[in-house]
Image (cartoon, rainbow, N blue to C red; front, side, top):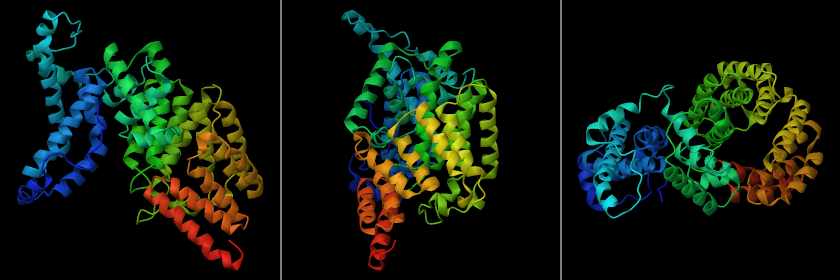
Amino acid sequence: MARTPRAPKDPPGNVAGSAEVASAHGARPAEVRQALDALWRIEAARIIAQVARITRDVGLAEDCAQDALLSALRSWERDGLPERPGAWLLTAARRQALDRLRHAATVAPLHQRLGEEHDLQHAVREADFAEAVDAALDDAIGDDMLALVFTAAHPLLAPDARAALTLKVVGGLSVAEIARAYLRPEPTIAQRIVRAKRTLAEARVPFEIPRGAELAARVPAVLEVLYLMFNEGYAATEGHHWTRPALCEEALRLGRVLAGLMPAQAEVHGLVALMELQASRLAARVDPRGVPVLLADQDRARWDHLLIRRGLAALEQAHSLGAPLGPYTLQAAIAACHARAPGFADTDWVRIVALYDALLQAAPSPVVALNRAVAVAMAYGPAEALVLIDALRELPELARYHLLPSVRGDLLQRLGECSAARAEFLRAAELAGNERERALLLARAADCEASQPRGAC
């Protein structure tokens, strides 16, 4: 079973014993762990992608990257942080890969003598190792990250396994974060990831971006993964920060590359439009202290108008292709309504409700229904929306989804039912995994409590 691609909370070895040495070189264990955690979130996917080009095995590449991470933890505590830590990790991971391939080539004759049927066609000879590393940069399209996404989206895997594996390996998400995104138990997601890596390894799936019909067949799975990657960056399910802009930027970059590969695919442009428009609001979604700022309170002067123009252009391109509107294009159209509105009060909520109606037809889901209820509240009032929300409370998929009680609390607060609203905000805070979001929900609960004696919210 491959390890989770994150810096471990507790490093291996004698941490206390290494503290004096690390301090003597200017890098204390806590500093090393903090630096590695930040670096891993940024570099892990790129390292795994480049190593997978050598190993032709995503699971093995992830193992090699993890081994490099553990080596860095030991070495950097002893010697201090290197000048180029990202390059250090990549070099260490490549060495791990080459050592494993050397070992495979060495033990192959013994396996054959024992009669074991091992396919070692991809083991490279000692003299070919440097060439194999160079080949990692030689792809005809030239993007290891996108090749990694397409490899993980292979049709051998079930759709849910494709997305879970790619989010873990490419997005660097934990099993808990992926489980929250899919509203599924963590053990279920963990088993999917393990089985997916085993299936790809046993089938010797080539590490490459496919061509022709095979490329088109894998696009829906790739779009789903990029969409979920972006969403995790836009509103992180866990951690100290409400947003993870680097994850949004990488998903958007890969989406742009894919749009260049497939200019006639409307939904590719639709997803790019959606990500451009949503990314335009990232800077305004938090204040200077990192506290979340809700849409109604955002300073629209801080929205990135270049990204808005790019998003609207991508949306126009999607419409121009004449295909039926898919879920990403419809969501982009909803985002465009916000982008075009000079202020929150100017938003065309009636049109947004109509777009959500279409989205529910194209891609029905409890989360879409919840978002539609929010739009109904803005267009037609909280009482009508509360009826819709109460119907959703019976769905098991939303039983532990924190945004359901959060939305219900907002509606109750607007209706003047402060005590009930407070209970909903507290319930939402209990379910929320992100620390910033939990603090916001607790603050809203406190506001309800403060308002209650005056009889109004």
